[in-house]
Length: 225
Image (cartoon, rainbow, N blue to C red; front, side, top):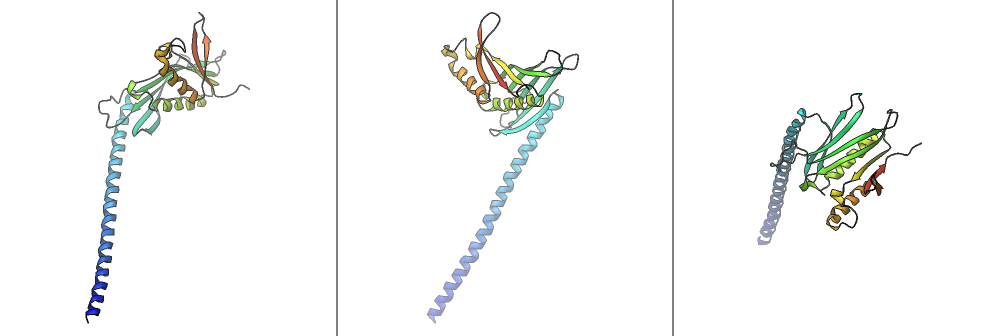
C-alpha cells in the first residue's frame, strides 16, 4: 500500500511540475510579447516625432532627396538649386540635417553639413560638362562620423543623373597646408586624401596662373566617345 502511494505521489508531482512549467512558459511568452510591444511603441513614437520634425522643411526652398538612419540618428539630405536668367543651373547645394531627438540643443533647421557646387557647361552651353565642388564643410562635432560620405554619395548619384563627365574641386591650403611638408596640417591632410581617394577621386598638383601649386581633385563619371 505504501509503495502504491509513493508511486501515486511521484506521478502527481510530475503532473504538477508539468502544469507549473507550462504556466511558466505561457507567462514568459506573454512577458516577451509585452516587451516587444513596448519596444515597437517606442520605435513608432520615435518615427512619429521625427516625421513631425520633417515639417520644418515645408518653409524651405529645398527638396528632400534622402532620409537615412545613420549612427542611431535620422539624417536628412536636401537639395537646393539656383538658376540663371536663361533657366540654366547656376549652382546647387546639398544640405545634411540630423533629426536626432536626444540632441535637443541642436537647431534642427540648421544643416550640420553642406556642400556647394557649380555646374560647368560646354562652350556651346547645350549640355553640362562637369560639376565643381566649391565648398564642403561640416560642424566640428560631426566631422569624421560618416555624414560626409552620405553627402558625397548623394553628389555622385545626382551628378550621374545630370549625365556629366566628371566631378572636380580644389583642396584649400587652409585645410591641407601649403605643401606636404606642413606638419601642422598633416592629420587633416591625410584624412581628406583618404576621404576623396575612397570615392575614386584622383588627387594631383595643379599650378594656377601665378604658378602657385595647389591640390586638385577629380573623379571621372563616364568616358568621352
